[in-house]
Image: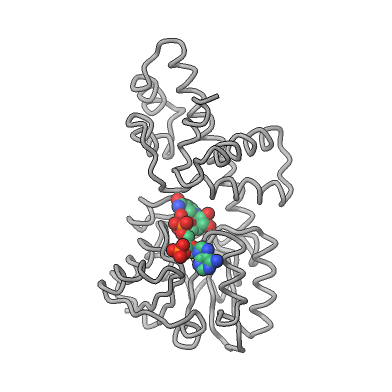
Length: 286
Ligand code: NAP
């Protein structure tokens, strides 16, 4: 059994099942969530609750953040009671939130100034893989830190893929989420085109998912399209953020601007907290 004590910050749609899996694997886990009520489920499973993120930093060996966006992550690292209020030689912080490569490089810098090791380890896969411990984990890190973190990643994911120094994994994450956005926009447009010509969505989904054009994500989203119900697994607002970050990081392909505009319009229409597949609702209303 691994003896590292873990501090987990951010118990949202992803953080909750991921932290649970670490508890189930036998890790000692202390948790902190901005809305404290969300900690209860984890405490019932054996986690302890920390008074502040700084408190977690003092008492844990490895700190893991799973937060909404760049602003949230920077706040948790830099605020008055945050992770980096004092030097902490040898501690490791793993940011698993999706943020820009620039933010990851900045976090590396401010952690180093506090003698803290930092790695970015964003994940590919949504709530179901988070629950099943089958995420794909992208890792930007030194070899030494990766070796320390790998047993944790083995609990959370089916594979962890080191892609280079801190910051690189955030670039890889923006790239895979561009493909996610293309997939779901394409799926929505395809279903609507078929329906317009009298083909039932049930039949079109079978044609897609039984054939070579089907993939993991078209399978996962089929039920929500069939039921016309989109409770957030991956909130649409998070994809808008990721596509914006990809643009800012230099993605200038022919499809990025129309793709971004489409999801951003859906968010403006009030669909930001729905699942990303709710893009089809926005397109149907056009
Ligand atoms: P979520 O359900 O919206 O949870 C966000 C978490 O961040 C909550 O714990 C929230 O606390 C916390 N938070 C937000 N702003 C904060 C602040 N200023 N200070 C402290 N805590 C703050 O998000 P999620 O779906 O778990 O996603 C988390 C990250 O993983 C995002 O970067 C997302 O892009 C990425 N991701 C998500 C998926 C997915 O399918 N959901 C898949 C891959 C990657 P409160 O509870 O207090 O609001």
